[in-house]
Length: 67
Image (cartoon, helix red, strand yellow):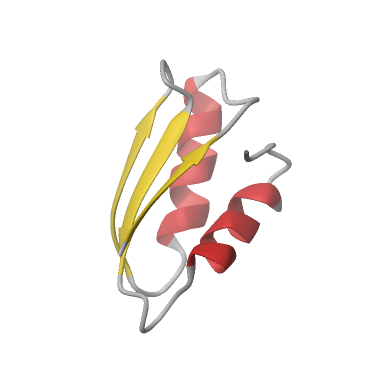
């Protein structure tokens, strides 16, 4: 599966690193690409292990606004 999330308040390299670590901690994540310019996170994952809602929640738990 692939999901793309728009993140409003992602501005620095520190933000990108925090988001990447949070997503990577979920079992089943295959790849994660983050574009600071677009404000997007693109995640490829195995939906047997993790759902898009869990991935979304792991980003929101860091305090980022996802639309």
